[in-house]
Length: 373
Image (cartoon, rainbow, N blue to C red; front, side, top):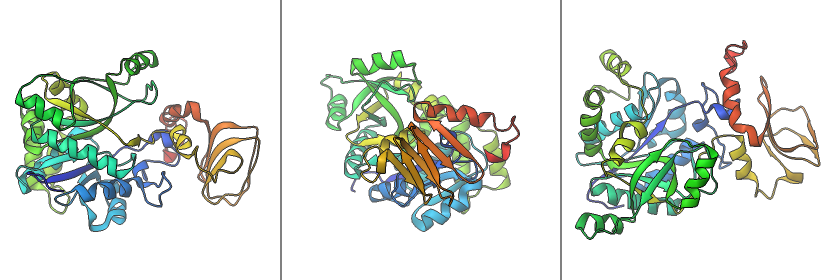
């Protein structure tokens, strides 16, 4: 693509995806798994979706424990920065932004989660093009998802269209973006229903596009210790690793999400805009989401979709089975459940309660099963 500023994708690849346990674990998290059935991991799908838009090698920021696995999957297709420890999204994005600005002055970065499913890619590209155009104007641009239900699992973005006649407002409308009045944390279902009914709210998918310089200058104002550290870390890094001094600096960084660090305060200043998405999006957050993705699969015999090689017999059941076991699995009269057999763990979960798997994972340590987390 051609823009007046180089565009560099940034992919924060962190977290352990506890709601998808035991498929996703600390040692092999969600983004390294093929959950969309594409034959590639979610991370590789994300990288391949972004590479055609990139002016320079995309940057993946991941935990040191996962660096080797990430490198095995992406090869030379991305530059990998290894975090000494998890600090949420803002330090990771700030580090990548400082590196991008140092090596490509004037660069625009786009931060996109490593573990979301997006189709079709052409519509995704259109949304990113619009966000880049808005970022050129100096905005922190995000891409919002039209809600398909009053979900309490996502944060929300309240947007409005300004009918002002000044040059900046016209330029923003021309980019296909709306002004953002506020970000709202995951609401209860009743509040979410009000949001959806109003037509003013979109789901927050955590996609942010901004000039690296603008991001760092905003941090100079709001979190100066982080922007100072990010610039130092950009000079300190060698082959994706920090020196001992860099690691010590990293450990003192505030663990905070970009939503809280920048998006929310900048929205109150009128410095954030949102591009309504025209693509299908799923954060694949739990087994219920995976079941919805498979609901239209014509190969799901008798309403049972099998991921893996396990032999499955079913009678009057609707379920999704994850197993490579040679042991037959028989289902009778089950409706809307997921069965996960990983050899060391057997999980049976009602899809409607799939979000509660994360609560169960929190109890593993105290129950004496910490090695399974």
